[in-house]
Length: 632
Image (cartoon, rainbow, N blue to C red; front, side, top):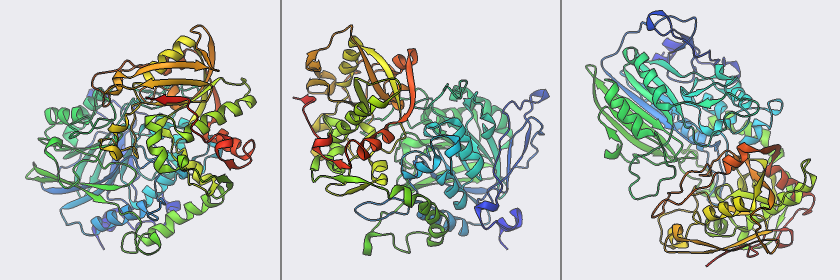
């Protein structure tokens, strides 16, 4: 009988038989400035033998420390619901590969070692599995990713900004129904569902006292919504400081689950986010304010760190920073070594998740845990099969709609797919209770391509438009519209900046400078300079007439932009530019007066394809480059 069985009892065979984790209120201060804790359920498939969480009716911790140990931290971040995926190269079983690597590491662990498995957030939103989350609590079926994590032995996770893309009540259902592990955030406060996550926890693994703290970014997260008006993201620095001062004497090692983002040296690449307080700040804080080794397990920026070893840029004395890219391309590994109570060093590397290959272009048996795939992932896929396999129509044989072509077009000018989406929403707006819109807008990063000359299913639309954006209506004056366009032209990428043309920016990725696409009645030109910040706006018309600054326009935007995401909160645009370009606040206009339609951009596009387009996805139904944007 191994150590885990001795300490935790016989592991339960199915997820249905495990107990959900349910959190408690976070106001846990006791008299004499002590903090109260109580035991929380552990994931019996994980490596933590006990978990202590803050509780109003708990007791102070009285745990014995350990002087000699190795803590192996296996970590993922920004999986975005990619449990498995298919491509021209073949099927990739991301989650089944990760589960195999976690299981193998635990089986091989020594007597003085613990192996924990953690996530740094943004586990949801970005694949067809989002369909199982439903559009409202009444249609929620499951969190496929939390269910899979639980089966793979996840020990702890943090709430990322995309966990709240749908209603917060759906977020708490994700946790209460399918997370058999604690979910943390010390600075996400005020929600009516606060009692479903913890700020921090102390976990015990092979006698090692591990202090876990969760931190969530205030960037690109839905807060203060109509259904959860007091939900806010407080200062991560203060939350971190408070947690460390309370737990320092009770832990041997720290694991900071940070969905704040990496703000260190990116070795020549343009940073994706400008962060007021990021992982480097967390590492410096831990180095100065704790005597215990700290591993900052990061997410949010999709950064590939420590691919072969712990890089010097991520080493801060007793603190280190780790991140494993995104979408399950890697499983990160960090090993913290402590001897005689002193930090001896931290090692790190990334374990690659192999793409589909070989005969039949599928994963080979040696690549993944076939039993895990069959037991947990296949049933989830089966529940989606009928829905995702629904036939919607057929694309013409036009290259502009392909994934490869659109990946480039969406960043450098017109995108046939974006044109199709926006024009479809304008058409569908005739059925909106609030009336027809003049202009529809969508951000470049949310637009992918479609198979060319093939039958199209619902699943293909999910791949083309992976994010569950609602339609929000705002009124803009002509002067505001012109100011938005002035900002937008600074955000377009020059062809020379992209990797296919010798640049360093990969258009297959998430290049969030914030470039926007518009429906057909709005037309304009961009005279390019040596750098996009030098670009000039020319020839702006609406219905072939110059824009009247005083005219009101009814504009359909997506909820991503309405919340200031994609660098549309008024901040300067800096990513890859020679100097900052003036920003524009779509968020500010939406906060003044907007209508939340409750309609999904994707759903309206699907309705358009089914009805007005009669299943035809071609130039006649709107998939075209028509000169609404000229770049010269």
